[in-house]
Image (cartoon, rainbow, N blue to C red; front, side, top):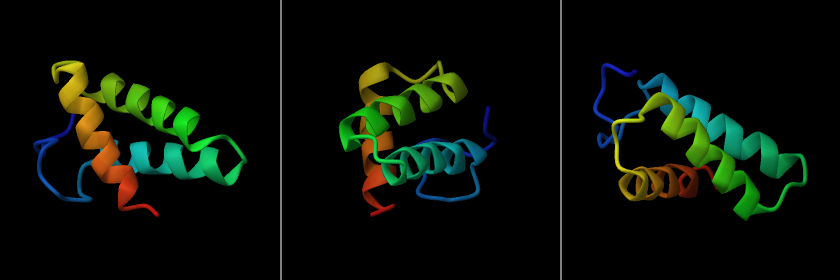
Length: 68
């Protein structure tokens, strides 16, 4: 787990890097954005199982929207 709160807007958290890399790699490989987002959310849940699924989804959506 990260030492940084998942709610903070920072790139210091390695889970954020993993989430963004997952999304970007899948989209660049031709996967639909919806599938890439789903997998990015799964990566986040792996790193932060303590965060409720809905809240985690919002965080991931915010993070990947910055990738575009």
